[in-house]
Image 1 (tube, rainbow, N blue to C red):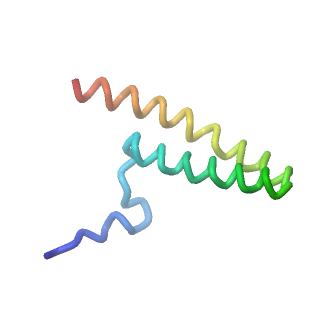
Image 2: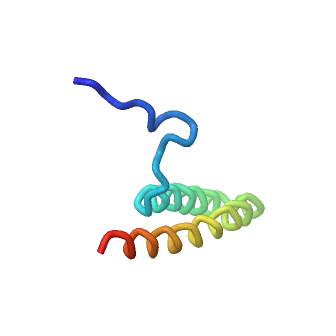
Length: 69
């Protein structure tokens, strides 16, 4: 059985809508932990990091849906 490990290289994971959602999920989880622990400045930093990925997700999702009808 051969495994393709190239997805673990830098830039090796496809920018598929599902993968972008995985990233957003991780950022949301970090945001919540920071909130519960009272790290307000870091919370705002993560919030700023999330915004471009949400935009990328909606753009990528729209393109994906258009190309896979």
